[in-house]
Image (tube, rainbow over all chains, first blue to last red; front, side):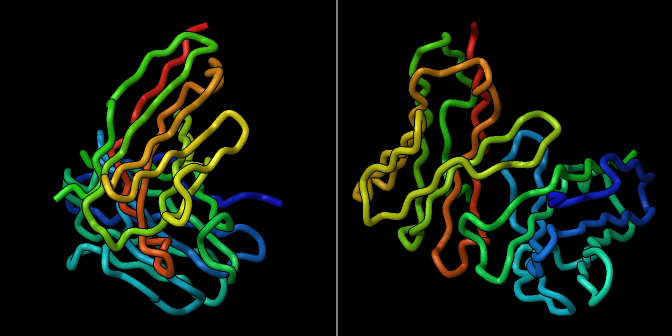
Length: 115
Length: 113
């Protein structure tokens, strides 16, 4: 049973470009959560999605960031017109319908560098 | 406003020693307190968690101590091993929305052989 798969592992973008981060949840998991880890900081919650629905986006920046989890395919975190401050590690986690608790697992993260 | 303060920032312990990491929280609505272990290049992995109905929880060499009145909780690693060397994060959330964790800044633990 493969774990949470994130790709790419490393992504370099120039200021003003778009970044697309992908997350494939564990088999049997239909809930996806995105977190951001800035340098020297703990992880910060961004968004919680179920298939085709955004459940909680209270941690998402108001502009340039969006997330989706389509019926088919991975969840996508999209950052438009990236700036240097977007450089961070982005982690997704997934869980079953039982919810978070001991049922949620993190992927290895995508490290975004904006140059 | 940082809602979960973690200390120390880094910790060096000899093999066989006890590692202690402390966290303090501000939001009295928090009622779920997990600890995560993260190795370089990997995602965080749940280590152990506690809810405020108990003051201590032990799983193998890992123990969480919880002090509700002081709004503090700590992780104790007994008989620390070099393989325990990692970054440890405490976190807190409200049960029912426990996916919305507030993390501390992390403690880099190094266990010397």
